[in-house]
Amino acid sequence: MSEPIILIQPDWIVPVEPQGSVLREHDLAIQGERILELLPRAVAAERHPQAERVTLPGHLVTPGLVNAHTHASMTLLRGVGDDLPLQRWLEERIWPLEGRLMSPGFVFDGAVLACEEMLRGGITCFNDMYFFPEAVADAARALGMRVSLGIIVVDFPSAYASGPSDYLRKGLELRDRLGDEALTSFCLAPHAPYSVSDDALRQVGILASELGLPIHIHLHETAGEITDSVARYGVRPIERLDALGLVGPDTIAVHAVHLSTGDLDRMARRGVSVAHCPHSNLKLGSGVAPAAEWLERGINVAFGTDGSASNNRLDLLAEARTGALLAKGVSGRAELWSAHELLHALTLAGARALGLDDRIGSLLPGKCADLVAFDLRRHEFQPVFDPVSQLIHAAGREAVAEVWIAGKRVVQTRQLCETAAQAIIPEVVSRTGMWQNRISDILSGNAAL
Ligand SMILES: [Zn+2]
Image 1 (cartoon, helix red, strand yellow):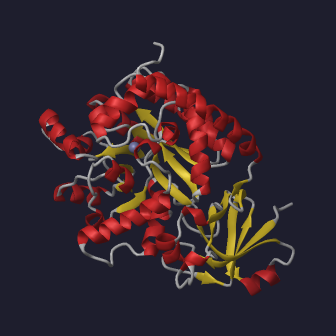
Image 2 (cartoon, protein in one colour):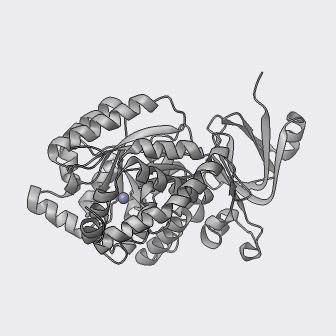
Image 3 (cartoon, helix red, strand yellow):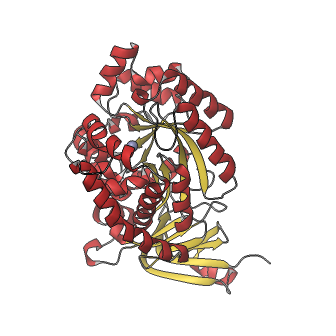
């Protein structure tokens, strides 16, 4: 017997493909995990008279948002590293804390908090880079989220792995083990050019092409990263990565703030995607990324939140609004990045960067039913000339009302509705005080060694 059909009936459907299209008086029919069709409401009533209906007056339905770069578990480090530049933030706060705290339990609890925050902000898929990725997978599975797990590689040892080959071995074993899970995919995630050696990077490049995996790497984040690379290797980081075989259409360059014309041309030529994280770039004082130059070259730009320790919120709609305002303000070109182009960057561009655009990122029949319904009825969102403009520039994540992932409703009237999540979240929240005490003890030097 075929699965029941559900008709979702908002005021507006924005399928993202074709870009700029706004459907009124239309229904979105889903069946099982997939989108069956988008059709005029009157036709839907005739064609699917028995279907369950989800009536959403005043709502806008879009594809689920794709967070192209985060470290979900760092929610537990939210607020511990304010007002520091990247290297001091890493060396004085993040790496010492991670060195003391890192465990599957820490990673799981942080990731559960992140998944809840992301779901309630309309994010249905996130691209993660962290230690113990299996614990991130457990958290995502518990909350019904789609995840791209980064197979992290870094030169220094951690509680998770002893060195680059151990990181790779453990990540690939996890991929073999979870390979059949419909909501899980993988990418290779060397941390950054300054924290991964040539040998390990070369190995990543070979594995990426053999296994067809994206490469997800922090790149050209600060001016110091460039000068250090030139001093140490005689070339800029992206040139070094290119020579090692890591720059191509499956590469996701995270941050990409400091780029010469040659770097930009190389990225465009090679088809590199960018994960743009404007709040993290601003908060760490890293700089303002050259968004106008990316867009002029047709580079695929997605948005990422980065982790909560450098942001400090996992709010992708806020990233898009800030990204657009910076691009317009810095370039002096108000026409840059329309609301519909930003929604494309938040959805289909992210899916494309992760190699998932055949499954998610737009509301085409046959794709997975990863959807968000935004409630635009509040007085401060009126009047609604274009619901996408309203979403990006006037509303925000507080407008998220309903979320479906692979056809399953995971948020209903702003509340998580996954049974497992309802049990797990209070447990995790009850442990945050313990994590906070441990972090405070470490920072004050009182932690037992
Ligand atoms: Zn990051």
